[in-house]
Length: 151
Image (cartoon, rainbow, N blue to C red; front, side, top):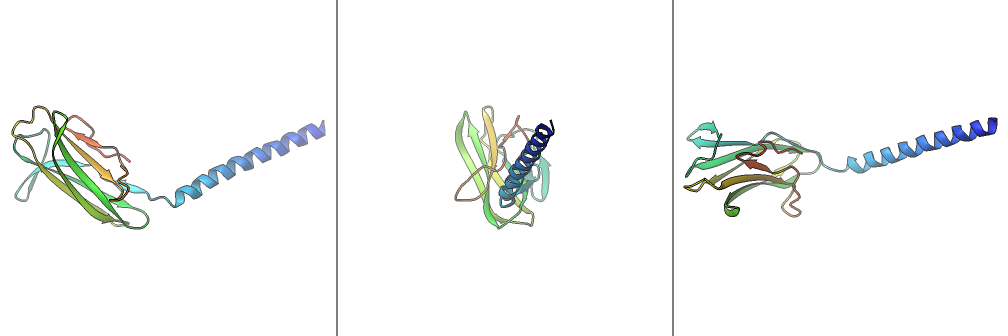
């Protein structure tokens, strides 16, 4: 009976050690990966120095978007893009590329909206760098979509 209990204890200890090893190896793998932090994305209209939050697309106006980004690790040239679609056809785009590291960087892009915005929507996306262009956050669709880029 003692041998059975001893075997069970050894097996339990072995299983716990295996679980700890797998968790630790996962943590080590993640340690080298950058961690991105983003603010909400802001859509608005700029008139001189005045910013007005956008609540809808306004025909013929220039829509501006802003986002603040920081990351751990080495600096990367990240891309923030704003794209206008009319009837699911790309009609306008703007992008900003900046080196992002530990300090917070503000991206700003602007696009001219068409004179008829009936079938128009705007998409904002943030990519990790100019080479890989991996989306590091969900796209934000305006109007009617998420106003946040969520990692």
